[in-house]
Image (cartoon, rainbow over all chains, first blue to last red; front, top):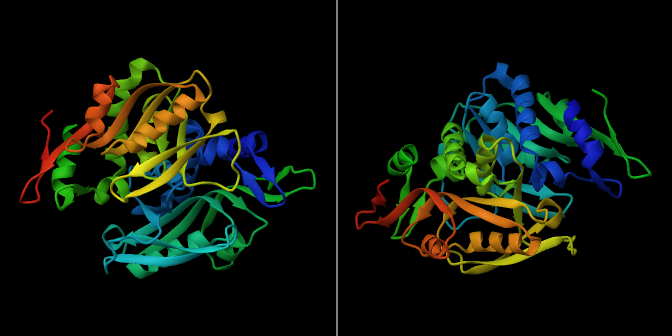
Length: 193
Length: 193
């Protein structure tokens, strides 16, 4: 997505070889207009699979998921919650997610009632790196008896294995921007559209 | 807001005397159409104060903030983050927030660059109970040199002191629904519009 690529070039900050900070427009401050155009671009790609709902994970996936849900005709958004809860019960599906960035394992969870069996689910997240969060969400869908029709991502880090692993499995993965690498001068190298 | 009151009556679950769960449409599963109409209702109330940006706090405030920002002509949304970060610096404003529900103190933070000095800020959150999160966000704005023009809330728990405290201070507080109490049968009693 041209506008997103330009925003990454203009506002993205790099730290070392593998961190791209896009706080300015995506995951701390939200550029509202851009976020809705990103949601529309994902919706254009996935409209033909007619998802019943969007699944994302708190917190920074929520905005893109809502923008996409709007463009798909106001389908519901479910956001998986992080951490364990006081009120655990069999109504909840849970999955472990390992973060390579933070070297920690965490749990995500969702209420089965909001992932009705047989639903067609579009998974949306702002970032894709190692793909652990997406795998956790796919696991929640499988436990709930839902079918994942695709995965829509804001920014994919192409130098980490999440995207390739999903494509190899045949998942319909659509990333609005792909960062191929961060060069020795700290510049973001984006995959050409 | 009539539609929100009806959703609370239809889908809200009560636990004891003071918990209203609205997971079904507000803070786990999002009813996308309702969320945008809630955002529009807040925008109608606050449009005349011409906010430069909306401040909310992750995670469940993000959806309502984004919907309201859309209705205000795509102004930016800043979401304060919870917890401390590895990268602390003087560019960050922080505030302590005490949760009466969880009996814990946590920190919220925002980057000063996204709260430019002199900005007019509308604070938005999904729930208002004791008002600690709103006070924390007001504190962030004060530290950053911003002016808060009002506070827009999805559901106010009228039997907790947050709303009254803000009104007594002269804050322009607008809550789309106010739960006055939970009766002995577990029914939600809503303030008439």
